[in-house]
Length: 111
Length: 115
Image (cartoon, rainbow over all chains, first blue to last red; front, top):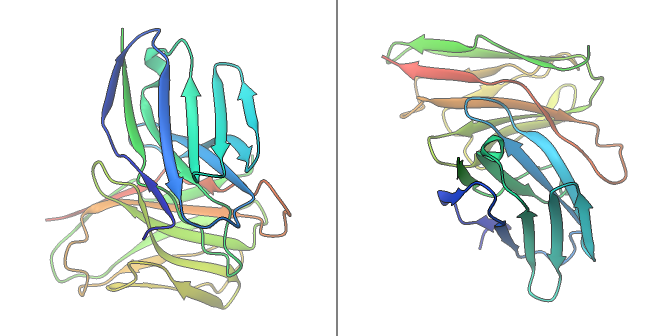
């Protein structure tokens, strides 16, 4: 079982829709997770953190972790065409420094 | 400006040739990483290094080699043993001393094509 799994999509929504992006994880020891956004042919950039308890909100973006089901979610409200990108979830680096990512979900927001 | 620089942006290689991708950072980060990304795929870890003169294999190290002679530099060599090298390669670094919220910083990538 992979440590982090993500549905690659693609996911296509109309502008203004609420988007839900999800990851599952297997290691209950993870204390926080990160969401990265990657535009086409660019390197990923950190979008936001979320800790293993509770929600975190940043503008139109909300990140959420459900520890009981080992489920991570990123919600995008009022989605915009500029949100079209690949979204990757990642746990923190392991004790050996290994840093892994989910497969990424490709989102297209149509005007 | 601090950041990570990958070069070249586009690279073409003939079958059977080795090629080296450059990655330089001026963020003073100890940890550096190389990932491969295929179309519609996520990031797969090739090699990573926590300190100078030390590195570990990632999940898909076969056909690749690295060196870490300087803190700032982590070049990746794609050898002729890599059977399907055409891909987008990303280099990243982070500060492992950060106790939480350890953000990885990425370069802009090198697109390697075998011709």
